[in-house]
Length: 162
Image 1 (tube, helix red, strand yellow):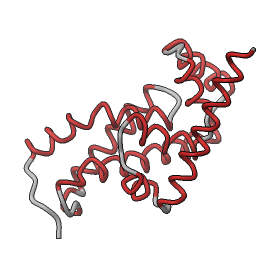
Image 2 (cartoon, helix red, strand yellow):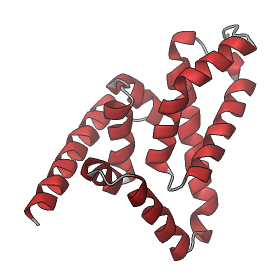
Image 3 (cartoon, rainbow, N blue to C red):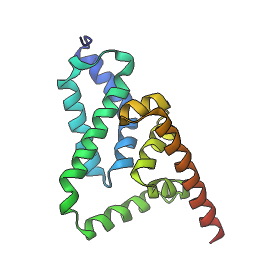
Image 4 (spheres, rainbow, N blue to C red):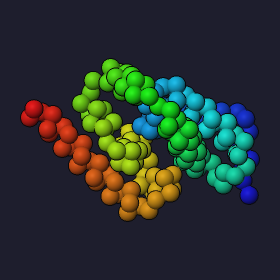
């Protein structure tokens, strides 16, 4: 069923995808520690489930989907225990990390818009790949990208007029 990829090939593919994985995790999670945990867990699960990968051409898409699941798991596990102080500290850290208006506007998007936006515009995934990763239709991806663009545009326009 799956492909035969050796440890060296796997490592090379993971290293090639590392920056993209971080951007994806950061678009979902609030802090670097959670991003690192999600990436580590995703890589371990991917290695364990490598036999389920049908084609090397889809490795990055497959690994990103695993990462998104790991991020969601971290959110679910922390949801009832996140204190206001932790939330505020994480967002303050993110603002200090980048004062870019665009970055801020993108990070203010709801998760449903932010994740496809980052995957498409920052990471360069196609609508079809995003559809597969998020398990939603291609038309839903297009709608979320359209709405996300409009929300970012509105945020940037309002920021300049203020």
